[in-house]
Image 1 (cartoon, rainbow, N blue to C red):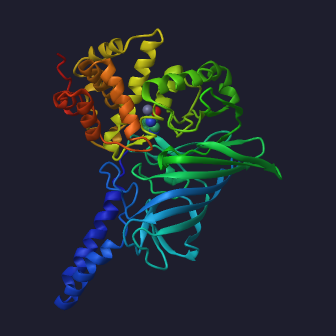
Image 2 (spheres, rainbow, N blue to C red):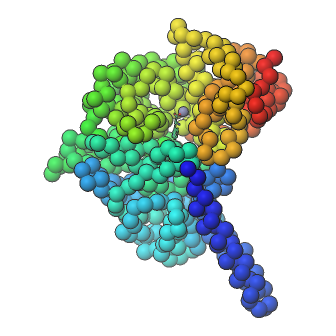
Image 3 (cartoon, rainbow, N blue to C red):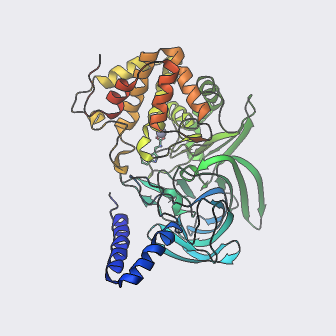
Length: 474
Ligand code: TRP
Ligand code: ZN
């Protein structure tokens, strides 16, 4: 499903401004022209500049911290929330946007003063009572309530706050964060989070990072989660359900919290038991695990159809198999700690996590990565695998298609073959280390691979990431 509505909204605004300047007298027009760029310069951009999701994220500020306080009632599907965003202006701002869709806003302040706001699709346009200065810290408090609804992505899948029979499956890739909290909803902006969720006693609310408090009063339980390491909004979760909870520390001192829907428990148990050894194996290959907390949320959400690498604790729509566990946890390095700056680069997430599955199999008595590669390469040129090159999915509708995952992993396998194992694994570790808690682009990865190997890898990456059709394999 395509969402052309957004494009329409923006072009109308532009047209209106042009029409206005065309009809005013010359002197006034000159005045407006002088004021024009200045006033345009003090409104934060409605998007972060991502061509696949033009309205995702916003310009003019960075969010340091989100403090979310939520209360959810699974029976009525009603959510009440307060979001306190601690942000910093990166330009003069007379107004700025947040991404927020669906829920009703009951109050909005900037630095405790009532602020004006209006809503335009997913854009929440905020006009504070005074102008904000570059570098200035400010606090936005938004109170809201209602029945959250998931968004439908360009590929037809659901994301955001997705109700289940006992709570909600909450996963925001690529757009869904804005269905349950007001956000600067693009991975370019990363923030720390405190997420506090109150649910009826007997239900569990599981989020990212470390559980710093839990208490039950008057028939309700409040869970307070803290994610200190920077996190993209799409990786936040507040999944609610009836869960069996298991907590322990690993040998490396990671705090593990597993929450499992009892109906999935017997199938999930043998896989979850392997989590510490999977994380140890991945740490040897990719470098130190990037967060202090780890774990799993195994829900039963039959209408979802995917798992998500929610930061520090992936969420699964049903009991995962071992390769899915390996995949989602590999994302903690590739995708979560090292974030995208543009959704076009999605192969940096999915190609890497898929290649981690191949490596795991190779090193644990299963098929070699070469065998996985060969099986895919054997597919005819007409196969969907070759529909587009993974470095250029073309639009948000294709970012989770087979070429991104499989041909993305094939690209890494080709790289490994070209530079040799020692250099290849050094490239992966250096990538995770240099961009840890930050961002990385495809161009930066190519550059790093060339620097570490001393080879010109341009032909390899051009062929595997950017050339149409099935590559000729030498
Ligand atoms: N990133 C997820 C994974 O591969 C998959 C995913 C998240 C997804 N959101 C999606 C797939 C939406 C399809 C549609 O681990
Ligand atoms: Zn993935």
